[in-house]
Amino acid sequence: MEAAHWFWFSLAEDNNQWDPNYYLGMMYKNGLGVDQCYKFAFRHFKLASDLDHANACAECGDLMYSGKGCLRPDKAWAYEFYHKGAHLGSTRAMNSLGLMLE
Image 1 (cartoon, rainbow, N blue to C red):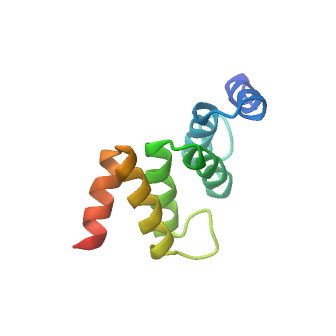
Image 2: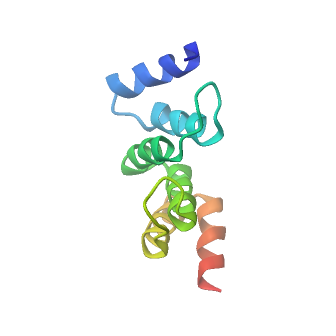
């Protein structure tokens, strides 16, 4: 694995901060320096979401809506992630929430 992965992974393990988990989620979602894995991406986005990272909530919602990184799509849970992200100020979550409510 690339050094960037180990850098963010060590920060995620040592600190209770959303930054490293969000960036690890992005690395796994997009296959940046690691094998693309939506399951690992969701895991890290969820950890960041639990720490109130607005865009991580939107990413969790996207993965839940599409069914990537989970057993099956779950639109009710995606709605919860989008709703939380919107309240935290994520414009992506606000847009996705609006599209769901159309």
